[in-house]
Length: 145
Image (cartoon, rainbow, N blue to C red; front, side):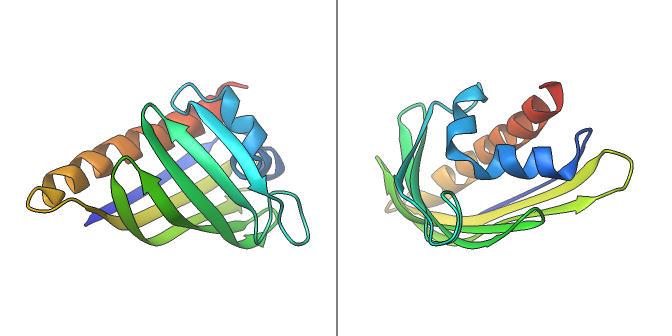
């Protein structure tokens, strides 16, 4: 099982950080993410609850559904499908806290398991390491905008 938890203070206002993390179109600006596409719009907001999007990094692609959306402090997602390796995704949460000085505290958690017989643990460790790098890179990129 992989457990990714990234906490970081981003030197940008909470609205800017939330928009960058919730809007699929902004993912094209992240070097660590290849392509993101919105397949189904959300119920109340385009990228909100119910939205289905794909996110691709290298050859790894996931289909994630937005399951909770509370602008600008909270978002949850569930990875419904992944390829080329299957995944069971248990938790995807992004929480933001306005620190009152134009900075935002971000906590990003993702937990799951890559379904690979015999060597799944190896891939889980790789996913944990790579996911941590990607999440940190994205948050750092928001700060540089």
